[in-house]
Image (cartoon, rainbow, N blue to C red; front, side, top):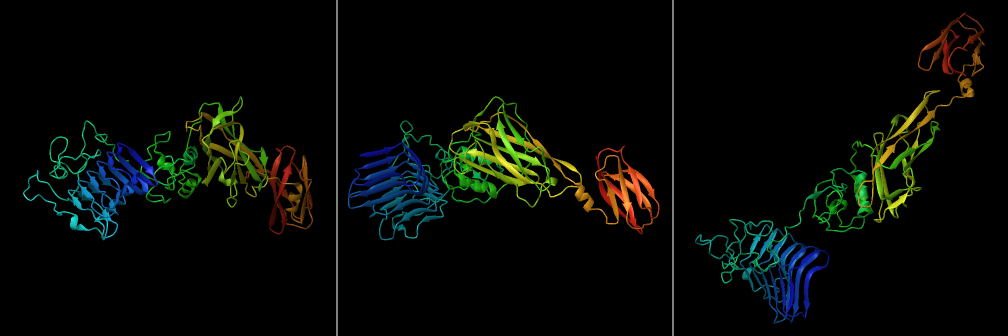
Amino acid sequence: MAEIVCNRVYNGSIRGIYTFLGTADAYIAENEVFNIFNSIGIRAYQYNSGDVVIENNIVSECGIGIGETTVGSSPTCLIRNNIVFDNGIGLSFWGDGGSEVEMNVVYGNDIGLNQYEASSGTPSEVSYNLLYDNQEDFSSAFNLAFGGQLITVNGNGDSTDAYFNLFRDPLIDSNYVPQVGSPLVNAGNPAQVDPDGSMRNIGLSLDPNASCLVAAPPALPRTPVYPGDANGDSIADVWDLLSIGVHQGRTGPARDSVSTVWAPQPALDWGTSQASGVDLKHADCDGNGIIEMIDAQAIAQNYQWMPRQGVPANGQAQLSIDVPVSALPGDTLTVSLRLNQPNGEVEDVYGLALSIAYDEAYINPDAAIAFDVQNSWLGADGNNLMSMHHVEQGRVDLSIVRTEQIAISGEGIVAELRFVIVDSLPLGSTAHLMFDIQAADVIHNDESLIPTSWVGGSTRVDQVVTPTSILDAASSSVKVFPNPATDRFTVQWEQTHEGGELMLVDLTGRTQLAQNVTPNQMELQLEVSTLPSGFYWLRMPVGKGENRALLIQIE
């Protein structure tokens, strides 16, 4: 006799336990079989060979829980005292018929009992089973002639009476043990007894001195996941990419719905955790049972912008922002992100995530902020590295992580950002464009943090004004020279005017000099040697009731 006893079989895609063709008598008992995707948990296929007994098994989350095919005149199949739940089909029959099906608990399946077709596969007996909360208790082809009397109430109210098939809540606990008031108690075949000498219960019938399922583990939980929230913190952002990179290639149960819609989606635990203790199922963002690069699409699709604030750690590793000292309006500014250590390489780096804030007033809103890791010492993007970034409300979130479970040591550039500066600033003005790191995490390949300090960067943006551009702005009726000047300017009018007040105003709007101009005065010298160097507006009369302003420079 072939014995298959006391096994835990799970997370497969073909079959859990299978007896095939010429197998001798087979005894399949006290096994827990679950998550056999779209296939059969326990399959008995006996062809003109031995008998098979399938009893005291727990089968769940399979395409078919228990499937029977007995072909020929001699083999018989006894299926009893099993608990079969949350499958596509609980019990299914293909063979010549004659199987005995008794004292099983069959609940929460799409179909409780299924017959392959009306003319074959009908069991010889279906009795003392409990069926509950199945979408259909019996398939439309199932032959109920062998189903026993479908009664649900004792004829005389005596709890010691044996029931036939029941259709009530089984009231069992997480260890599959009947609770007080459960209809399973003493409701089995009266010709059978449990190990304690009482009438047989429906469901598991185990010898507490020998059984491996006396304290059966509870079914794996189905807590929900949100696609894109790979690290289980209820937010989809660049920090989630770290979890995908660290656990790249890991597999587990696929979700019932392979979807990236941001909604609570029930999912079986994978039974293994991230370093934070969050189950690994969260990193499978699309729910197909594999953690892979494509899962990052769910992060981008469901991105949630939330301000992050962090405190630099007192570590040897340092993140720094490197920018050119100065730039001009309209320039494309390359911002380099560096990861260094004062005395050499940063050791065993696997990835990083951070937020960088910048002043939106100086960045062209119509030009995309480019991000690349082409020069990164962490790896090659799309090969052994994955990256992403998100821009919103004056902040860039970015993440870079390896994908081979192998950390790397190095120093220098890890990423570059390219910003396009606005086309112009007020004439003669200077702006300081700041880039500040708001929060950052650098990790090893076991997800532990590398203590890291960080420092931002800034560049000076100058609106350059040349003498040529100043003269181009002058009125054809007046000339001002030399410009720029050191000690004095000469102002010459080339047409008559009504006179008025000539004023020299700094760029903050404060008047520095004022002088009256008489009508039709054709020349005037303006002493400026005592004024600070810089740009000024010169306001002067140029015609009948008309004034003109000109930008001049004092060196």
